[in-house]
Length: 111
Image 1 (cartoon, helix red, strand yellow):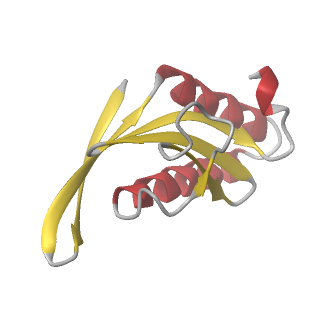
Image 2 (cartoon, rainbow, N blue to C red; image 1 turned 90 degrees about the horizontal axis):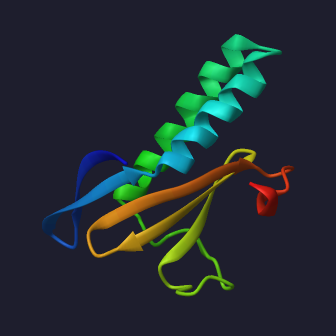
Image 3 (cartoon, rainbow, N blue to C red; image 1 turned 45 degrees about the horizontal axis):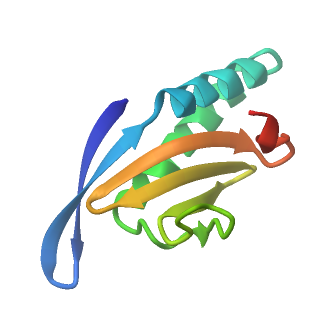
């Protein structure tokens, strides 16, 4: 699992959220980038950077995204929309765990 430390401010006090990428989410990023790069290497780099930047913003607003109502703990599992991509993540205490990433047209259940 890859760990990134982010800092932000909230309600007048400093706070930090740790951002982790699961091996599955890292594999998803690689798979998506490879798929896009086959047609446009420039687009693959740009989209990968946009995804990482969108995910990084979660450190400041971890609960802003849509809850996954069918999850065992719908208050903790959320879906972030970044362009044409969905980022599923788990919020736990001061940690964010990026679980999976897929294109909106993909059959995410088969991932």
